[in-house]
Length: 115
Image (tube, rainbow, N blue to C red):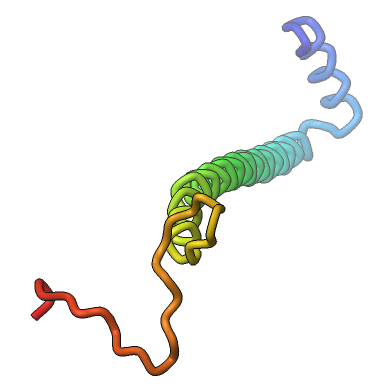
């Protein structure tokens, strides 16, 4: 950032080069240019911030999805194992106890509490 002495030298040189008639118009145009530059810069910074927030949210969503999948696996694995163990037939000498297989024409088991 230029100091006060540098700004004074720039003002004197601009006055000598452009003259006193064009200097106010040149200053207005320069001020408009600086305002546009600031506006564009602020817009770009806001877009970058939004993009960074979206990326952070995406990372959080992916992390939560992984955690949910791991929780689902940890819950369903014991249930799947329990159901597969309950559905196995009893084999002599295997030590696995389960319901005996039914023939296709056997009636379903009677449940007194269901009626």
